[in-house]
Image 1 (cartoon, rainbow, N blue to C red):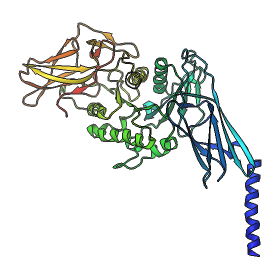
Image 2: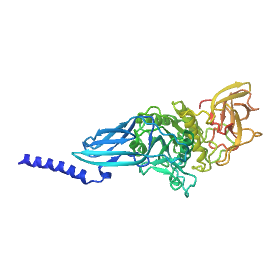
Image 3: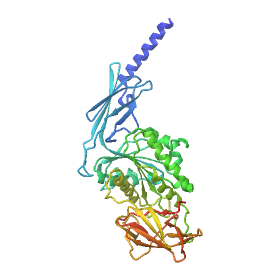
Image 4: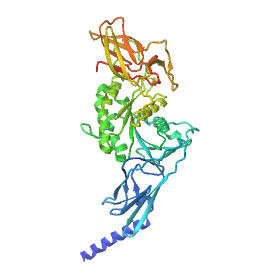
Length: 461
């Protein structure tokens, strides 16, 4: 009797599965992984994983771009397929309406099947955009009439809402830094661009880490784990405000973030570019030694460039009195310049000069820079306008350290792409600092292409 009951029970389970598959709608039978949906951008030139869930032990067939891949769901209904590399179709302009493609997912079990179709998918380059509130802020306002970029799309985690196509109507929902980054990037590479925004206001970097010696952070688990494996071209990072007191101890955390994300994705050392924090408040002239506020966390970002395939967006000139500088245009564009210059090899795209070396010449110190081949200049920047050269002005926020360890405000003379720093009160200088304070304003250094020189200290601490 028990055997008969057991057999009947198993038959009912099988019948139930068939009825479920026959009667359920597509959304219930097949659930795609978080990043997959209508209007999505899929990463070109890599083996591309696609995953989701369906009925346990069901057969799944995924068709896209003349490829067909199959998988069998495990006991939990999870499946995953791997597509061969695809290449994006070049755009004639950023305003071109690209021809989207369909992805068809078929679930079959015991002679029954359901089909789910994803529409208007593009193959292009995908960038992960993460950090805290300055990365999370929206464009806002009313519709932006000129924002007609059909091959530019955005997805936001963790709610994993729909991929937004950039239209004048949708543009206010785009994240500001992401929008300006992606728009400039796309104008340089002319392929579809997808941006995934994973940011949380007020979050510390520890909450985004995923490897020892740090614990896996809640924001990593919430925002990033559901994305792990989705094809990426690279990532940008704008955070540090909540870690200001870390000073140079920010360096091992930022390094862990980069290497930990790369390890999780298993897509090699993909590019990671980060924002060197802008100023906040207003610095005074009573402390030539500097080192206050965000000076050392900026230096930590410079030192993080020792990690391969990284880059820096210098924003020392776009700060404000408050925590959220209104000028996100320059921030996004400079991140895009880092990507275009480094990841895409467009060396004509300018990036910020970085301290390279120094040499003591009598009572002066000569400083040389990377990325200043066309020379340096002094300029003043207002809002999102280009920096205005002030050729008769001396650069501010330069300091020399004497042999006794005391710091003194100093003068700088531009000599092509070098800077000669001196001070009448310092006969035997040993080190130089530039803009090494909370918020240096006024006449600051740029290269001739209009990119600001990064704050620096030559003594290593």
